[in-house]
Figure 1 (cartoon, helix red, strand yellow):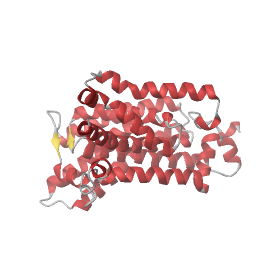
Figure 2 (tube, one colour; figure 1 turned 120 degrees about the vertical axis):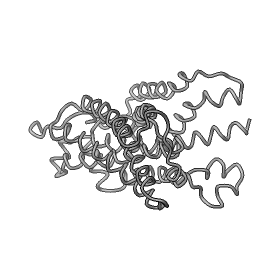
Figure 3 (tube, helix red, strand yellow; figure 1 turned 90 degrees about the vertical axis):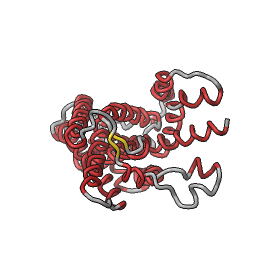
Figure 4 (cartoon, one colour; figure 1 turned 60 degrees about the vertical axis):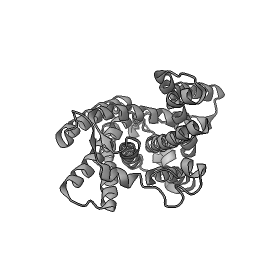
Length: 331
Protein backbone atom coordinates (compact mmCIF):
# COMPACT_ATOMS: atom_id res chain seq x y z
CA UNK A 1 0.00 0.00 0.00
CA UNK A 2 2.85 2.41 0.86
CA UNK A 3 4.31 1.88 -2.61
CA UNK A 4 1.09 3.24 -4.13
CA UNK A 5 0.46 5.89 -1.47
CA UNK A 6 3.77 7.70 -2.05
CA UNK A 7 3.14 8.35 -5.79
CA UNK A 8 -0.37 9.57 -4.91
CA UNK A 9 1.03 12.00 -2.36
CA UNK A 10 3.73 13.15 -4.76
CA UNK A 11 1.17 13.80 -7.47
CA UNK A 12 -1.12 15.41 -4.91
CA UNK A 13 1.48 17.79 -3.49
CA UNK A 14 2.71 18.85 -6.92
CA UNK A 15 -0.78 19.47 -8.28
CA UNK A 16 -1.82 21.19 -5.05
CA UNK A 17 1.06 23.70 -5.24
CA UNK A 18 0.20 24.64 -8.81
CA UNK A 19 -3.48 24.96 -7.94
CA UNK A 20 -2.76 27.03 -4.82
CA UNK A 21 -0.62 29.47 -6.82
CA UNK A 22 -3.41 30.05 -9.35
CA UNK A 23 -5.98 30.42 -6.57
CA UNK A 24 -3.69 32.84 -4.71
CA UNK A 25 -3.74 35.17 -7.70
CA UNK A 26 -7.51 34.98 -7.91
CA UNK A 27 -7.81 35.57 -4.15
CA UNK A 28 -5.81 38.82 -4.35
CA UNK A 29 -8.13 40.05 -7.11
CA UNK A 30 -11.26 39.11 -5.17
CA UNK A 31 -9.97 40.78 -2.01
CA UNK A 32 -10.23 44.06 -3.93
CA UNK A 33 -13.90 43.38 -4.71
CA UNK A 34 -13.39 42.16 -8.28
CA UNK A 35 -14.77 38.75 -9.20
CA UNK A 36 -12.50 37.75 -12.07
CA UNK A 37 -13.97 34.80 -13.95
CA UNK A 38 -11.28 35.38 -16.55
CA UNK A 39 -8.77 33.38 -14.48
CA UNK A 40 -8.92 30.26 -16.72
CA UNK A 41 -8.20 32.29 -19.86
CA UNK A 42 -5.47 34.24 -18.09
CA UNK A 43 -3.78 31.02 -17.00
CA UNK A 44 -3.87 29.73 -20.59
CA UNK A 45 -2.24 32.92 -21.88
CA UNK A 46 0.48 32.77 -19.21
CA UNK A 47 1.21 29.13 -20.00
CA UNK A 48 1.28 29.66 -23.77
CA UNK A 49 3.37 32.85 -23.70
CA UNK A 50 5.86 31.42 -21.20
CA UNK A 51 6.32 28.19 -23.14
CA UNK A 52 6.64 29.96 -26.49
CA UNK A 53 9.32 32.29 -25.10
CA UNK A 54 11.59 29.49 -23.84
CA UNK A 55 10.83 27.30 -26.86
CA UNK A 56 11.96 30.06 -29.23
CA UNK A 57 14.99 30.85 -27.07
CA UNK A 58 16.14 27.21 -26.96
CA UNK A 59 15.70 26.93 -30.71
CA UNK A 60 17.79 30.08 -31.30
CA UNK A 61 20.88 29.22 -29.22
CA UNK A 62 23.16 26.21 -28.95
CA UNK A 63 23.62 26.22 -25.17
CA UNK A 64 20.65 27.77 -23.31
CA UNK A 65 21.45 29.47 -20.02
CA UNK A 66 19.50 27.95 -17.11
CA UNK A 67 18.98 31.22 -15.25
CA UNK A 68 17.84 32.98 -18.41
CA UNK A 69 15.39 30.16 -19.08
CA UNK A 70 13.80 30.69 -15.67
CA UNK A 71 13.74 34.48 -15.95
CA UNK A 72 12.33 34.34 -19.47
CA UNK A 73 9.62 31.80 -18.66
CA UNK A 74 8.48 33.46 -15.44
CA UNK A 75 8.83 37.01 -16.72
CA UNK A 76 6.90 36.50 -19.95
CA UNK A 77 4.21 34.44 -18.21
CA UNK A 78 3.76 37.07 -15.50
CA UNK A 79 3.70 40.05 -17.87
CA UNK A 80 1.35 38.48 -20.42
CA UNK A 81 -1.09 37.44 -17.70
CA UNK A 82 -0.76 40.87 -16.08
CA UNK A 83 -1.87 42.48 -19.35
CA UNK A 84 -4.98 40.28 -19.25
CA UNK A 85 -5.64 41.54 -15.73
CA UNK A 86 -5.25 45.15 -16.82
CA UNK A 87 -7.62 44.53 -19.72
CA UNK A 88 -10.15 43.11 -17.27
CA UNK A 89 -9.74 46.17 -15.01
CA UNK A 90 -10.17 48.61 -17.87
CA UNK A 91 -13.59 47.18 -18.66
CA UNK A 92 -14.77 46.59 -15.10
CA UNK A 93 -13.16 49.46 -13.16
CA UNK A 94 -12.85 52.25 -15.71
CA UNK A 95 -15.86 51.44 -17.92
CA UNK A 96 -17.73 49.73 -15.05
CA UNK A 97 -19.12 46.93 -17.20
CA UNK A 98 -20.55 43.87 -15.44
CA UNK A 99 -17.69 41.84 -13.95
CA UNK A 100 -19.20 38.43 -14.65
CA UNK A 101 -19.70 39.19 -18.33
CA UNK A 102 -16.20 40.60 -18.81
CA UNK A 103 -14.65 37.70 -16.90
CA UNK A 104 -16.27 35.14 -19.16
CA UNK A 105 -15.22 37.13 -22.22
CA UNK A 106 -11.63 37.25 -20.94
CA UNK A 107 -11.67 33.47 -20.52
CA UNK A 108 -13.00 32.87 -24.04
CA UNK A 109 -10.55 35.39 -25.47
CA UNK A 110 -7.61 33.98 -23.49
CA UNK A 111 -8.24 30.39 -24.57
CA UNK A 112 -8.61 31.44 -28.21
CA UNK A 113 -5.51 33.66 -28.08
CA UNK A 114 -3.47 30.83 -26.57
CA UNK A 115 -4.46 28.46 -29.35
CA UNK A 116 -3.67 31.07 -31.99
CA UNK A 117 -0.23 31.79 -30.51
CA UNK A 118 0.46 28.08 -30.23
CA UNK A 119 -0.47 27.48 -33.86
CA UNK A 120 1.59 30.43 -35.08
CA UNK A 121 4.78 30.10 -33.02
CA UNK A 122 4.98 26.45 -31.97
CA UNK A 123 3.07 24.58 -34.69
CA UNK A 124 1.82 22.06 -32.14
CA UNK A 125 -1.50 21.15 -33.76
CA UNK A 126 -0.25 17.68 -34.74
CA UNK A 127 0.93 16.60 -31.29
CA UNK A 128 3.23 17.40 -28.39
CA UNK A 129 6.19 19.73 -28.70
CA UNK A 130 8.75 19.45 -25.94
CA UNK A 131 11.16 21.87 -24.29
CA UNK A 132 13.29 19.46 -22.29
CA UNK A 133 15.93 22.05 -21.40
CA UNK A 134 13.39 24.21 -19.56
CA UNK A 135 11.74 21.16 -18.03
CA UNK A 136 15.04 20.03 -16.50
CA UNK A 137 15.63 23.47 -14.97
CA UNK A 138 12.13 23.69 -13.50
CA UNK A 139 12.25 20.17 -12.05
CA UNK A 140 15.78 20.31 -10.60
CA UNK A 141 15.68 18.89 -7.07
CA UNK A 142 17.25 20.22 -3.87
CA UNK A 143 20.70 18.57 -3.45
CA UNK A 144 20.99 16.06 -0.58
CA UNK A 145 17.40 16.61 0.67
CA UNK A 146 15.78 15.02 -2.39
CA UNK A 147 17.20 11.53 -1.78
CA UNK A 148 18.78 11.33 1.66
CA UNK A 149 15.76 11.12 3.96
CA UNK A 150 13.87 8.14 2.59
CA UNK A 151 10.09 8.59 2.49
CA UNK A 152 10.37 12.18 3.74
CA UNK A 153 12.54 13.09 0.76
CA UNK A 154 10.15 11.45 -1.68
CA UNK A 155 7.08 13.21 -0.28
CA UNK A 156 8.40 16.65 0.70
CA UNK A 157 11.63 17.33 -1.23
CA UNK A 158 11.08 15.73 -4.61
CA UNK A 159 9.88 18.82 -6.48
CA UNK A 160 11.18 21.77 -8.42
CA UNK A 161 11.59 25.32 -7.11
CA UNK A 162 8.09 26.42 -8.15
CA UNK A 163 6.59 24.08 -5.55
CA UNK A 164 8.36 25.85 -2.70
CA UNK A 165 7.85 29.28 -4.26
CA UNK A 166 4.09 28.69 -4.27
CA UNK A 167 4.07 27.85 -0.56
CA UNK A 168 6.25 30.86 0.29
CA UNK A 169 4.00 33.20 -1.71
CA UNK A 170 0.91 31.98 0.13
CA UNK A 171 2.55 32.81 3.47
CA UNK A 172 3.78 36.19 2.21
CA UNK A 173 0.34 37.15 0.89
CA UNK A 174 -1.27 36.12 4.19
CA UNK A 175 1.13 38.38 6.09
CA UNK A 176 0.63 41.17 3.56
CA UNK A 177 -3.17 41.11 3.84
CA UNK A 178 -3.27 40.89 7.63
CA UNK A 179 -0.17 42.71 8.87
CA UNK A 180 0.49 45.61 6.47
CA UNK A 181 -1.29 48.88 5.93
CA UNK A 182 -1.45 48.36 2.18
CA UNK A 183 -2.99 44.94 2.65
CA UNK A 184 -5.60 46.29 5.05
CA UNK A 185 -6.40 49.05 2.55
CA UNK A 186 -6.90 46.43 -0.14
CA UNK A 187 -9.31 44.52 2.08
CA UNK A 188 -11.15 47.74 2.88
CA UNK A 189 -11.66 48.39 -0.83
CA UNK A 190 -13.17 44.93 -1.20
CA UNK A 191 -15.41 45.28 1.84
CA UNK A 192 -16.71 48.83 1.42
CA UNK A 193 -15.23 50.85 -1.44
CA UNK A 194 -17.29 53.96 -0.59
CA UNK A 195 -15.91 54.10 2.94
CA UNK A 196 -12.39 53.38 1.69
CA UNK A 197 -12.72 56.16 -0.87
CA UNK A 198 -13.92 58.59 1.79
CA UNK A 199 -10.84 57.69 3.86
CA UNK A 200 -8.57 58.69 0.97
CA UNK A 201 -7.88 55.20 -0.41
CA UNK A 202 -7.95 55.08 -4.22
CA UNK A 203 -10.39 52.33 -5.15
CA UNK A 204 -9.37 52.48 -8.80
CA UNK A 205 -5.65 52.18 -8.07
CA UNK A 206 -6.06 49.27 -5.68
CA UNK A 207 -8.35 47.34 -8.00
CA UNK A 208 -6.01 47.85 -10.95
CA UNK A 209 -2.97 46.76 -8.96
CA UNK A 210 -4.77 43.74 -7.48
CA UNK A 211 -5.91 42.61 -10.93
CA UNK A 212 -2.44 43.10 -12.41
CA UNK A 213 -0.49 41.32 -9.66
CA UNK A 214 -3.11 38.62 -9.10
CA UNK A 215 -3.34 37.85 -12.80
CA UNK A 216 0.45 37.72 -12.97
CA UNK A 217 0.47 35.00 -10.32
CA UNK A 218 -2.17 33.12 -12.28
CA UNK A 219 0.15 33.31 -15.29
CA UNK A 220 3.00 31.86 -13.21
CA UNK A 221 0.71 28.97 -12.30
CA UNK A 222 0.19 28.38 -16.01
CA UNK A 223 3.90 27.98 -16.76
CA UNK A 224 4.33 25.94 -13.56
CA UNK A 225 1.68 23.53 -14.83
CA UNK A 226 3.33 23.26 -18.23
CA UNK A 227 6.94 22.86 -17.15
CA UNK A 228 6.53 20.53 -14.19
CA UNK A 229 3.09 19.00 -14.09
CA UNK A 230 2.94 18.43 -17.87
CA UNK A 231 6.66 17.57 -18.06
CA UNK A 232 7.63 20.41 -20.38
CA UNK A 233 5.37 19.25 -23.19
CA UNK A 234 2.98 21.48 -25.09
CA UNK A 235 0.03 20.78 -27.38
CA UNK A 236 -3.11 22.68 -28.31
CA UNK A 237 -5.15 20.07 -26.46
CA UNK A 238 -3.36 21.04 -23.23
CA UNK A 239 -4.98 24.47 -23.34
CA UNK A 240 -8.40 22.98 -22.64
CA UNK A 241 -7.10 21.12 -19.58
CA UNK A 242 -5.37 24.26 -18.28
CA UNK A 243 -8.67 26.12 -18.67
CA UNK A 244 -10.37 23.43 -16.57
CA UNK A 245 -7.70 23.82 -13.89
CA UNK A 246 -8.42 27.56 -13.90
CA UNK A 247 -12.05 26.95 -12.96
CA UNK A 248 -10.83 24.61 -10.23
CA UNK A 249 -8.68 27.46 -8.85
CA UNK A 250 -11.71 29.77 -8.74
CA UNK A 251 -13.61 27.12 -6.77
CA UNK A 252 -10.64 26.70 -4.42
CA UNK A 253 -10.77 30.38 -3.40
CA UNK A 254 -14.35 29.88 -2.23
CA UNK A 255 -13.47 26.60 -0.50
CA UNK A 256 -10.61 28.35 1.35
CA UNK A 257 -13.03 31.06 2.54
CA UNK A 258 -10.81 33.75 0.99
CA UNK A 259 -7.89 33.00 3.34
CA UNK A 260 -4.42 32.50 1.78
CA UNK A 261 -3.14 29.88 4.24
CA UNK A 262 -6.32 27.82 3.77
CA UNK A 263 -5.39 27.55 0.11
CA UNK A 264 -2.47 25.29 1.01
CA UNK A 265 -4.42 22.54 2.74
CA UNK A 266 -7.53 23.16 0.63
CA UNK A 267 -5.57 22.62 -2.58
CA UNK A 268 -4.26 19.34 -1.18
CA UNK A 269 -7.81 18.18 -0.45
CA UNK A 270 -8.82 19.08 -4.00
CA UNK A 271 -5.76 17.35 -5.41
CA UNK A 272 -6.20 14.10 -3.46
CA UNK A 273 -9.84 13.92 -4.58
CA UNK A 274 -9.01 14.86 -8.17
CA UNK A 275 -6.47 12.05 -8.61
CA UNK A 276 -8.25 9.40 -6.56
CA UNK A 277 -9.37 7.58 -9.72
CA UNK A 278 -5.72 6.76 -10.54
CA UNK A 279 -4.53 5.47 -7.18
CA UNK A 280 -7.46 4.04 -5.21
CA UNK A 281 -7.81 1.03 -7.54
CA UNK A 282 -4.12 0.21 -6.97
CA UNK A 283 -4.32 0.63 -3.18
CA UNK A 284 -7.73 -0.77 -2.26
CA UNK A 285 -8.96 -2.36 -5.45
CA UNK A 286 -11.81 0.18 -5.57
CA UNK A 287 -12.73 1.45 -9.00
CA UNK A 288 -13.46 5.19 -9.00
CA UNK A 289 -15.04 6.95 -11.94
CA UNK A 290 -12.70 9.55 -13.45
CA UNK A 291 -15.52 12.03 -13.97
CA UNK A 292 -16.83 11.53 -10.43
CA UNK A 293 -13.38 12.03 -8.88
CA UNK A 294 -12.83 15.23 -10.84
CA UNK A 295 -16.28 16.49 -9.82
CA UNK A 296 -15.56 16.04 -6.11
CA UNK A 297 -13.74 19.39 -5.58
CA UNK A 298 -16.73 21.28 -6.98
CA UNK A 299 -19.17 19.27 -4.86
CA UNK A 300 -17.09 19.98 -1.76
CA UNK A 301 -17.07 23.70 -2.63
CA UNK A 302 -20.87 23.74 -2.91
CA UNK A 303 -21.15 22.08 0.51
CA UNK A 304 -18.77 24.65 2.02
CA UNK A 305 -20.87 27.46 0.55
CA UNK A 306 -24.04 25.98 2.04
CA UNK A 307 -22.50 25.49 5.48
CA UNK A 308 -20.88 28.94 5.58
CA UNK A 309 -24.13 30.64 4.60
CA UNK A 310 -26.13 28.69 7.18
CA UNK A 311 -23.67 29.70 9.91
CA UNK A 312 -24.04 33.41 8.97
CA UNK A 313 -20.45 33.95 10.11
CA UNK A 314 -19.02 37.11 8.52
CA UNK A 315 -15.49 35.71 8.67
CA UNK A 316 -16.47 32.83 6.38
CA UNK A 317 -17.99 35.11 3.74
CA UNK A 318 -16.31 36.73 0.78
CA UNK A 319 -15.62 40.49 0.52
CA UNK A 320 -18.91 42.38 0.89
CA UNK A 321 -18.44 44.31 -2.36
CA UNK A 322 -17.30 41.28 -4.38
CA UNK A 323 -18.61 41.45 -7.93
CA UNK A 324 -19.97 44.99 -7.59
CA UNK A 325 -18.76 47.94 -9.65
CA UNK A 326 -18.05 51.09 -7.67
CA UNK A 327 -19.81 54.29 -8.72
CA UNK A 328 -18.23 57.17 -6.87
CA UNK A 329 -21.17 59.44 -7.76
CA UNK A 330 -23.45 57.22 -5.64
CA UNK A 331 -21.25 57.42 -2.53
